[in-house]
Amino acid sequence: MNLSNLQPAEGSTHNQNKRLGRGEGSGKGGTSARGHKGAKSRSGYSKKIGFEGGQMPLQRRVPKFGFTNINRKNYEGINLDTLQLLVDNGSIKDTVDMTTFVENRLATKNEIVKILGRGELKAKLKVTAHKFTATAKAAIEAAGGEAVTL
Image 1 (cartoon, one colour):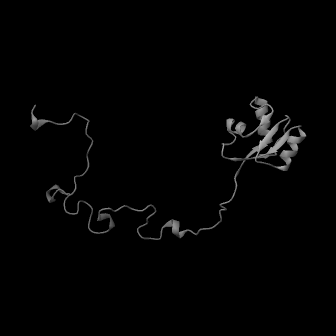
Image 2 (tube, rainbow, N blue to C red):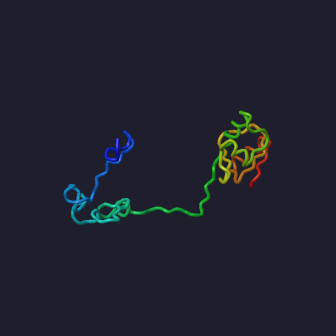
Image 3 (tube, rainbow, N blue to C red):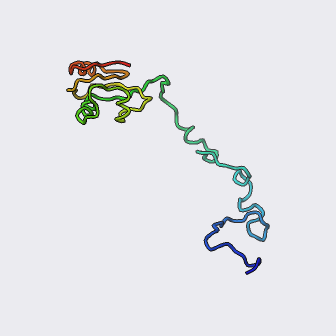
């Protein structure tokens, strides 16, 4: 072995790129396999997302419509039957608040919670939430509990 016959270990190199712009004799000289003229032949070319060759792109052809209220509050709804299920499982005893909702993965700590009136509540609970529907509040108080608004 000497310096004239050194080569990397088998499988250690993976470079199989075309060697562009290395003279006419290489077959990839001149235009370096980019063809003649046009945006793709220039250095620094990158196609924009959604570019359709100069045709009006789809996202600009399709009309815009609708309205999004930036001040809208999205409430995370929790129904009475869900609360009753947690009581039956033994997850909650007598008070329900934001920490309980977060622990039981019914809401995240930054969400606004609204108690909804689906199902029936048999347990006496002190429920603390941001909002209550009229039916939910009535059902909680009918069961002997208390609805506290944050």
